[in-house]
Amino acid sequence: MKSRLILVGLFALLWAGGIGYRLHDLQVVKHDVYAQRAERQQQRVVQVTPPRGTIYDARGRELAVSLEVASAFAVPREIEDPAATAKALAPVLKVSARELLPRLQGDGEFAWIERKLDPPVAEAVEALDLPGIHFLHEYRRYYPLGRTAATVLGFVGLDNQGLAGLEYQYNTEISGKRGERTLLRDARRGLLANPSLPASDAEPGQDLRLSIDATLQFIAEEELARAVEANAARSGSAVLLDPESGAVLAMASFPSFDPNLPATGARSEAQRNKVIADAYEPGSTFKMVTAAAVLEARAVDPDDVFDCQMGAITLHGVRIGDHKPFGLLSFRQVIQKSSNVGVIKAESRLPREDFYAAIQAFGFGRATGIDLPGENPGLLRTLDAWGALTPAYVSFGQGIGVTPVQLVRAFAAVANGGFLLQPHVVEALGHDDEWWQLHPVAPVVGKPLTPGTARVLGGLLEGVTVEGGTGYRAAIEGYRVAGKTGTAETAADGGGYSSSRFVPSFVGYAPASRPAVVGLVVIDSPRAGSIGGGAVAAPVFARIVGRALLYLGVPPDAPPVAPGQVAGDPWAGRETVASASGGTRGI
Image 1 (cartoon, helix red, strand yellow):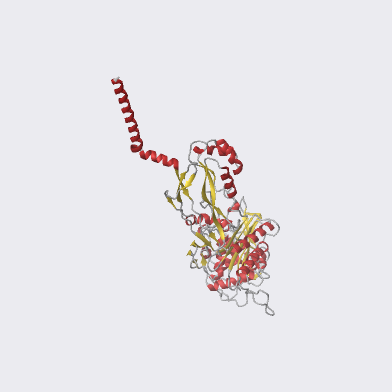
Image 2 (tube, rainbow, N blue to C red):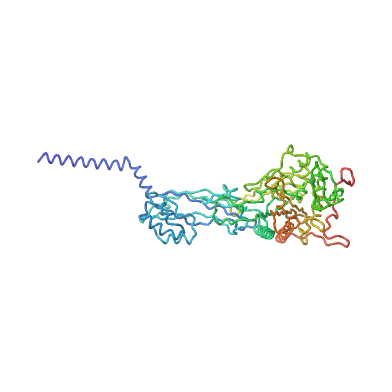
């Protein structure tokens, strides 16, 4: 009996010792391990996405904002019946139960169900009160004006990172800094934020203020869309620039897209910002550059006379024609009537090295540096790659590729007296009343011509928009307009040029006496009849720039017509550049 008691006592002692050892092991030796495991079961650290900065137009109107929305996620280990949960969620989320089921099964701690839900959908999911289904607050990008400036603004992905346009270009500045929140599981196994637990606040991104005015943007997009559709064209682009600052006032591409709609895979043609991304042969609009080169070099005077040989010239066995036969024309008339033969003969007075340098001085062949992603530098072959006919072709805009933003910048240099500016879309970064001006002074990057040459060239360009000029349809009542038409051929797939595809365009500025707006319109492949820049693009320019001048409150500058004077006479009071020989020359 005594030995039995000893045995029982020994067993009890060993049992108590084992319990004590186990308690010591749990509470002391492995305390941290089990504490961390319990914490993981009771707590969850989640990333907090900050709101992206707001993008404003030049007058403070919201173009892109961040809205707080709910995102649904699952904790699969909490879900007792995944199939029933999937069946309940499917009709609310408008997805199949089969698609949802894999996210709800298993013993995992986290799986997204649907992110950035529309408020009614989030409320409907919450009303189901399903175990294991929880919510986090995130931010969704919203564009209040829909398609307006869409190709400029760009869009963001599901994780709120910029994927195109300004959203991509300034992603670092406007995306902010992520924070963290620790969520605690309550008695119903729901997740709640606890202010006593570790957390770091998310920092909102900086705001952007643009040079683009939403009203001017709407005008440009409306008129461009109307023109593309009326001419049964493939696409079009338009841009308005402030010639004194390089600020983009409007930048339109058609077709466009709605950045509020979910992305559907690869970037589509509608998402391209054609003003900066599409290079094309400018055609006769490039005659402005040729004219600037010969006038600046004093190789040609506006009154010099050229024999345009009734519309054709043969160089190195190749015949180059005009759009109509011309005989003797002054250089003023060569530009006014857009004679290829006349401009070829004018360009031939320059060494090719000087002509090439003049083209480079206007910024062609390199990107403008505009603050948008995906800019095309255009195409300017190296001088040693130029053939015998290259200078002649380039003089009237063939054999060179330019983007709309490059060309409108070049015309802005004429409008502002000879300064080549770096164009920009964003004026300032900041918040509320604290803004950092990105361009306190106009960013001058070159000086391709002198003020005197710019004034003379401006007179030649005014001649284009009056009666007798190819761009007379660009005239705006009450304003003097300077500009140039262009009708470019497009490259054919098998080489050479297409006989059915053309790119009409017009670029110019107004008021010519004190330019406030430089504008360009390009229409790609019209198929409704007319194909010329004067017939297709010039009227669109007149409508866009005319409406812009009225909106901006720019006073008219067209003088009243004096007795015996032709309305819109661009030559009165204009200075001329003396020719190298000191007089008028005929060729």
